[in-house]
Length: 265
Image (cartoon, rainbow, N blue to C red; front, side, top):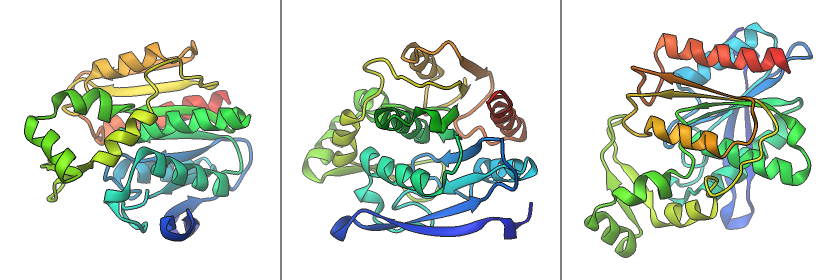
């Protein structure tokens, strides 16, 4: 596959004051039969990361399609990051899926992208379109992270900042600028919780989780399994794995998981 095989696309999501331009990189299939992949990145990540790139190249080697995009406020897309919520980014993910997914797709969700993937599955099932998902590969998935992982750990100062300023900041090891978490993100996160009942996913799911992940405890991945009724759920715990899971051996696990689902479709 060459870069000329990847097409840069843009779509507008939302209307009037809510309109934002979403940037996507689409690698069309050159044969039929194999499911495509949709990359759903994490909080403040973008579509040019090593895992997303590797999946695109791998799908190209299999003549299959690959879709990746940036949420609003991320990477090459428009919109303000601080306007972002799970509902807003879910709307954009579904819009990209509807525009570019021509065959059943494997949703590959990393961290927050795992939450988005699960919400996509719920929304597509509501539409009667569950068969558009061939499977899921969830990498260090962080469903309900605002409510389950962050809120219990908020300091008194952070809680005050949320109430008085509408946001708080915290340093991150993944870049020079601090992470910004808004009150809107927390409030909207409660409305998008998935760990409060059964998550009906009618497709195989592979969860890949590092046990040295400082951001998402490996026990969180096991809790997710309890909410997935399907017996076709595979959990891979990587003893020395971190949150990013971007080492060569980690990426090979991800590609192998994609292949297993694709070959069984």
